[in-house]
Amino acid sequence: MAAVEELLRAEDGGAISFGNHRLNEKAKLEDFEFGGDLYKVKTYKTMTKLERNGMFVYESVPGTSVNDFREVPEGISFRVEGEEDAQITVGLQDETEYEVSINGESIGKMKTNLGGKLNLSVELADAGEVEVKVVK
Image (cartoon, rainbow, N blue to C red):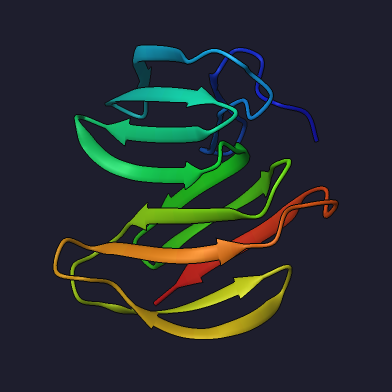
């Protein structure tokens, strides 16, 4: 998997891909229209952040490249790549329990905070592409 050179793009089947963990300088793309919403991405090697209609969706430290990011009422799924292990925060429903799996293996149930954020660590160093699923 490669970094998303155009910073944010629509994929077939209703998914988006975003982020470029290889950039040395901050880059951003605003007002990307997809599915009736406006997206904004900021990305570089130390951070990647995605917003939809001005609301938080995804953030990673350090930066990551994300492919096939899909949101459904039950949760989210995506494939992620980075140079180092990453701390990823995703925006979901407030105070809701989700089953989290990485590369098909459950890492357990996690509950979002009052603001709907869920934090997880993903081992990316020398891992290539990692699949993440977060489902109610």
